[in-house]
Image (cartoon, rainbow, N blue to C red; front, side, top):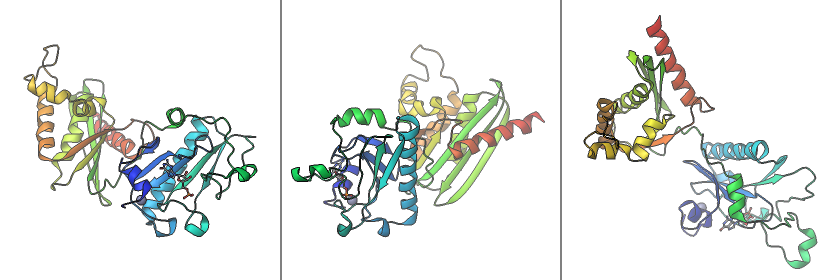
Length: 305
Ligand code: 5GP
Ligand code: ZN
């Protein structure tokens, strides 16, 4: 929304110290710097209050609040968090874009946290009412470096009018029997594909998972691919593929590019479709990556029986 300060932050028109970001939600440090790590979590779409926000977006915002709260407690040395939210002027909401405040707390930090005073510039005679006494000051940039969640592990399922494609490949022995699987989703509908090959490699199965997924897409919608394979993601993100192609499918050290057949097949698909590659951590807490992994392994088991 025009003239909304948080929309401007979301659009990158105003800088912020980013703690976390995904397709729907942004978390950044509060400019008031009144308590170490005072964080704001906002939906990327403009909603004024919790009451006017749609349930699915609100759930995403609260999931990020939970994720950051856990992160501050598990990884950043805090013992608790205050989670605050103001709705409407009467309730002291000063920025009319839904936001949740997270205030990290330490045992015995002696802070008194209140919705009313958080983030407000306090007049001098109100000093003894300071609710978030943050006496050390603190450099927001350094605080941000310390607290931010860099490795986004979130499951993205509804890619803002894009098809979301999770993929994984597995191999028993390398080379050996291999399996691949892909889960595509669009507006709540899911398509699951998997397959296997008797004699293959892990990288070939990672590539095959994405190829089969992309080949099954019948629309021109943009596609967000989520893979745990650095081999696949870096080839696009780090432009290895462009280099290989311009170098007549030779590597920088003049060797043959491995899996050229599959790379060419994948390249043709990415020229036809608008595809963005995203790296996810494998064998972690991403349920879709884990489901793909399990399906790929089932395919291997089928070949071995
Ligand atoms: P509210 O009073 O609406 O619950 O909280 C609004 C919060 O937004 C305040 O804590 C205030 O410090 C913060 N804020 C206002 N403008 C900016 C800004 O430009 N950048 C950041 N990071 N925070 C802001
Ligand atoms: Zn806004």
